Length: 635
Ligand SMILES: CSCCC(=O)C(=O)COP(=O)(O)O
Image (cartoon, rainbow, N blue to C red):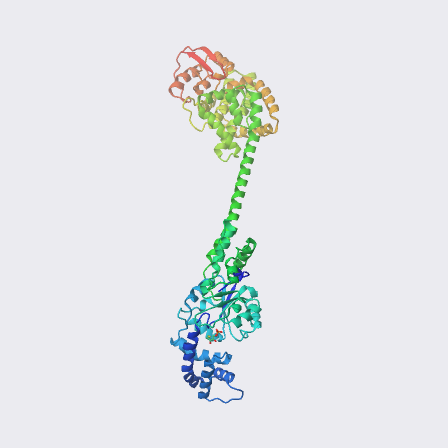
């Protein structure tokens, strides 16, 4: 009929209902149940008159010191039932008498059609308790055998007169203490105004329900209660929850709260219908309360289903913001990492790029290589030659660049390590060779000098070869140089003076060179770049003769290759083959044959010596341009 403005159903945790006139029609109770009890009372007492529980109950209904036979007891039970006595012992006897009727199917308790649906809904997030004049056993029997089926699964508590009279406010205090809730978290639905008033005095929310056949309640009395309803369906707690979600999430205008249906209006009804949406604080508080409640196990919740509304609500208010925060954090971290990486890369490459290039070479390609290779300050003029190869084969340049990245990534593979060794061994080998040359030149002839120079070529070209991961279509000089170097060593075996050098395993030498170069690199890295460059210049200057000639590109080294060719009358072609270059350091015969076979057989120059042929070879021109060295040869 009405709803008070103060009504706060969101707080309700327990819905307390009585039976007669609330869940069940008074007609059923009076015309069916009580009638059944009256009919069955005689038979029941005849069978159970000696039962101690029955005796005790009979003692509870008889007049003090009254002696009752079975027939008198039956008549007393009927009389009290017809008077609708609330005597607790009578209720016990009524329950005992009706039990067989429920069990054998003779009795089916009536419940209003809205009861089952409401119980199913309420029990999802609330407790449903029964408080009836009828004893607990009778209550359970009734709800176990209703016209709507067994509803006991939705009911968590049964209270009867053992808790106290429903008209005594004290009874409700005991009740909510037992339920472990506050008084205003219980909504008591009853058709009896007197009992509701007692509950109200204890602080319970009260709903007077007007069912067909119930006694009328005057309007002034109705105003005392929280709400007046005609059906359980008038109480829709879930709608309130949906409103809370709307309010808490999208901020859109919230429709007016759904007020339980009312039959008529009065001042309070109007107020109730105009009830403003709950404030956010209040809503949040209610949400939290509901979430807490939802976490608690329901005592008789075998059919309890999760509350979807609350579940969504939780996700909306908690999970989504949390996820969003995580994503944002992750992005921030990634950005920071990227920034750090970029900074590191710049720090390691940029400064050296500038310094080394400026100090060491004017060749642009060399600059590129120096840019890329962090640990190669030693490579100077020799690199210029090498870059001729790079010039004609962009793959080489690419390889160098790749190496930069690999070095930056800590050289994870053996191959990468090899590359590094080869590159660095190149310059180191030059130094060693220089020493050999000095001793040999002092003591012996040209031949040994030549052989050792070739050894130097091995080292250098080997490193270049390793740098070329991909074959170069136009210039495979680095790989060729490796083989040529080996050939020269083998050939050197015939020369006793250089056997010692020739027998030294190449691999071992490589290891030695690697170690030395590593040390050298470490020291170089620790030095200021400017200083390194200056030192390198000095070093290169002191070993200029051998360094340039030791290169695979002896031809392209300008003066040195020219000297060699002139001295030996050797032949060098346009730097296409290191075989040819190597042959530059051989005798005329070898050189001559090398030219022929170098063209025919590619890189293979280690085979048996060809018959000697007299061939006049003239070197017409030797270009020593760093960019594209060339030698013009006439045979
Ligand atoms: C199982 S109780 C049957 C009805 C009954 O006897 C009774 O007294 C109902 O009283 P209520 O307080 O539930 O209206």
